Image 1 (cartoon, rainbow, N blue to C red):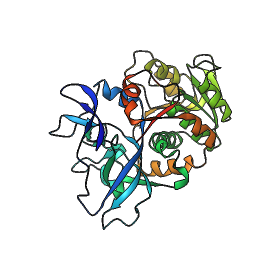
Image 2: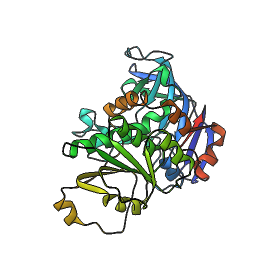
Image 3: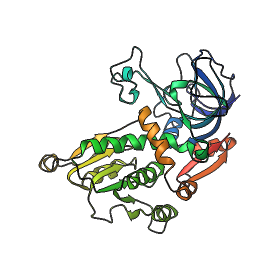
Image 4: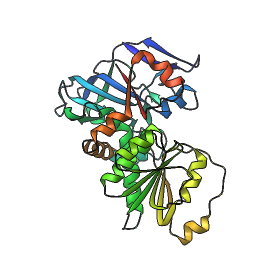
Length: 337
């Protein structure tokens, strides 16, 4: 079958033929990949900034955001059948399982010895077929077929919002999302769905297509740095350290900031303000099965026109340009297989 791979010896990105996967246990499911989303993580991987192939192999099949159709299921699988649409989770438990992995919270693994499909020591889904344990697959209603590929990035948002609401004292009325990429837009939609007043702040001009898309969804948009607005919750979805530092200063008293994309930053934070105003900064990565389930539920309630406008679909053979080329102007680039 076809697969888009990273070779860690030659440090190259290319399509190659690999053996078709087969069911090895009666708890597994074989599924055809319909769509694969491309995100900043894939671009970072293709620049060999992190990631590893499976043990004993020189290449890694990319792709961790996927939508598939079940082809066959093992005899012990009763919840999925051929024809069902599925989205795979990404992280797999450490062995032996730590206290978090043992309770199905692999997103909170404390050993760091987990694997991640398409990222770390486990092949991903940028291929014609894949096999997974049924427990690692989330069934998608047929009515969400056009948007199912967004479930994985939305699951990351769901966990971040859940974390923010758990930390913040009661009375959350406002939120700021920094960044107008797919994570930022999905975060804004999910917060809006919860009745929270949302502002998206990003570098795109006020008259940009992304700003227009956000406003059409009934969400306020402002250019980053051009507003003095503060909020109870700030979701950092820029990936820019300087923006993350500014995000901290957008917090109201009792406010909570969740960092999703930023890396190492050099700057100043007033810990006195954090103490005096009871503010919190927290990080969040990956997502739990419950977050994936919440993502499916929320996705079905988002405005379909907004979701359609987010996605730009291209064929598999365009993978080199989508991963190594300039960022696509559309919020979400998706490959159809």
